[in-house]
Length: 356
Image 1: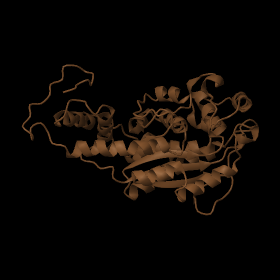
Image 2: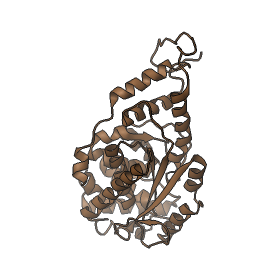
Image 3: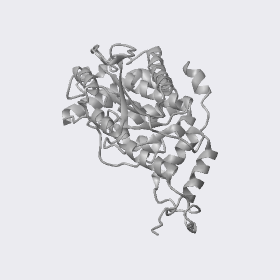
Image 4: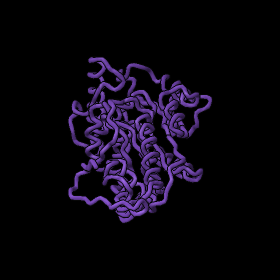
């Protein structure tokens, strides 16, 4: 399934994006005065292939998975926390769940690889946690592909249920370690440059984290030209699922709003599989996790929000939704210069710097 879908992904409709920008220029307000919000609306017009679209039905897919590398002391907490937080999503007792309720977003946590089963979290489990990548590959290639295909299938299901835009998030102790390992390989950068403290490691914990990543890379020699190989050897199932949503979004014509560091390494995995996927991805925020800036640049993204957030769970992506709602409403509902009998603004410069 994966290879066929990758081959059939179309580019976004650049013509519709241009038409959307022309429509913005005719709306009775100073030119380009909503800045990046206008850009995102134009991007969505290209994805939907129409200027007449709605994003009223929004969903957040949170992929929950455990990582065997936690055995190396790379996290403050144990793997039991993943299952607890996953259940909290359903009780509206997590940051992302509370934010979703306020923003009118459906939250859907997915057990794609937690080490233990939980009573209520939807099970799409590929395996019970990955293996310790310092000793053996985190997954088999087949498991990595199953994780990606799980994400693709979920996009299909969400589209069939009427969802028009999706965000991705994750929950999994140790997943900044896997994300840093993949970032080091994809960007060909030293481990030290791409590895941060995650959820607040001590100096000793950070040292163990870097050493675990170096050891895993030296042991497995992941092939940077083969994204699935990198994912299988030093990645995680949460990353696989999110990469699948990025691929599925591009195949099914659904915009995918990215969260921070871990979501962006999933996005880069997808884009390395097919560069056309980049056109379907919307950046939400700049994460405080150090390597996020490197991934943002690698993906040529320009996030709107910069609030020093580094929570994960899709929280940054959900925070963008109210702004998107307002931008789409202005685009769809506001009158034009002609309707208001106002002389249109004339653009004399490229930079959006009009004040009146």
